[in-house]
Length: 187
View 1: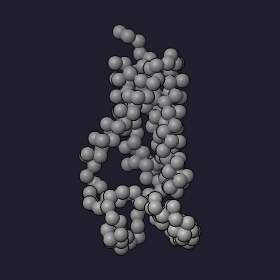
View 2 (view 1 turned 90 degrees about the vertical axis):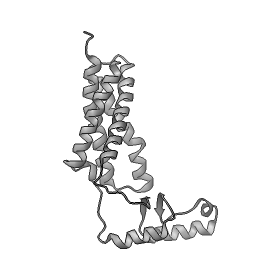
View 3 (view 1 turned 120 degrees about the vertical axis):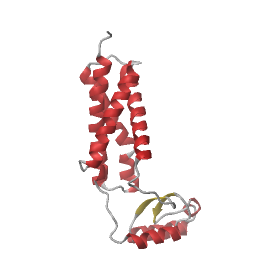
View 4 (view 1 turned 30 degrees about the vertical axis):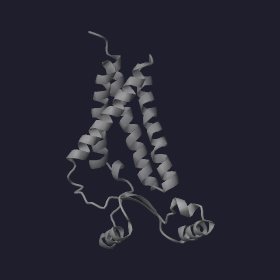
């Protein structure tokens, strides 16, 4: 029960930090840009992307990867053309209507913090070591998700650094609350 409460408290702290990182500080939005003329891009996506999914442009299908000529053509095109990693949804959604997204974010933040609190409760650690372990788990999450996206999918470096700051600082702050709650004495 102690780890559950610690996790809920830590998740709330992480959620609030995420809101600050995105709405007040620049970390959550680093590397994000707006197109100078988005109408032709949107029209091209509607016409050329067959359905929802993740697209890499230029790209290869699984079948094309088996064809040496297709791979050579892709390599030549990739060297001389822009690159895009596109998450495409053919049906629009107002990005300013965030209630459902915020509820989902709060839920996943709290669930993540409960996992961290449970892990930290398994070992007898001093307060400082629990906080450092939480920060290390934040770094771990960045290394397993954001760093590979930077490496393989060419996510912008500033976007990736912003994600690093957001994860490590956020889990350090959540770790402070989790460690404090786990270290409380029974009444």
